[in-house]
Length: 360
Image (cartoon, rainbow, N blue to C red; front, side, top):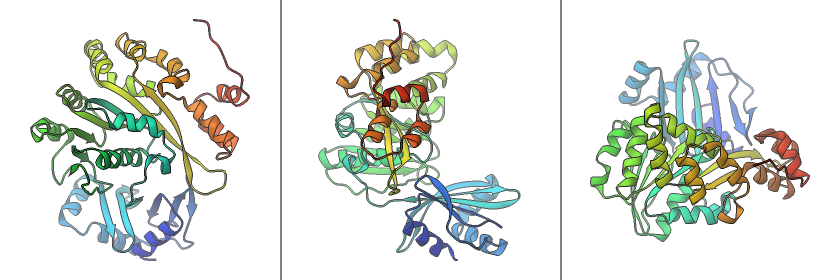
């Protein structure tokens, strides 16, 4: 099969990812599980032909030769848009392709907490973080937020991505999308002069280091609403990660800044549906109330989990309660939900309607 046929097969099976390697049978991730989609392994000439096709531009080829790893978007005519990562393993190239859907779904279609996300999208300044493991819907969640803002508000939105995944058309807002390596050299470089570009909202594809985090904090303090992603599993881990970007002597200062600018977090994990028709998100939400802000400021970050567990009045929800709801709604098998729980014992108790109390 050629590359276009593999992409077509991937789309027919509604796979999220395609895995290609010399001498291996092509596989795809379908409903979260890696499955065989073609019975014949790819030969060395097959794989070389696919790699050469994807690295057709001299810029991509040069980058791959120098770094042995490259990430970019490939558009296959009449099929779709794919995020491609090519890397070396055992001296030969391997490819992972992720299908990027062209249509941006809304919060309700994605089964995301619409009220909380709409409230976040109406913020005029501050920081909002979307968290979760790779491949669990962070980019899709962000895209739905940007599209919602685009539909209701006259804003200037700047995205800084690596690479650009979802493409947006201006509606009420004007959206400028910048890609690392093509439009700007790095996240800190893009953020250095971003305030001169008069944005209302900035989306930073991923905050990976102290310079990017510091630039994001500065942007919020200058009156911009910043949205970004973290490869963390929950709110507590995310806040700890942000603080730990910085040296210990700055931790008090960073916690103070976070307590003032952080508006909330949403953490997403995708679970296989019980009926086998795709995946469904389990969601933890945290809103920075005055109490949560105080805990951040005082360094009592791990205590925040208790307030997430009990914070439904403020729009908060724990993973534990989200998982139990998915089970009770008949969407997810109990064993699948239990497998994704942070604490299996607490999940079991919640499913039985038993609440665990701790001494204060």
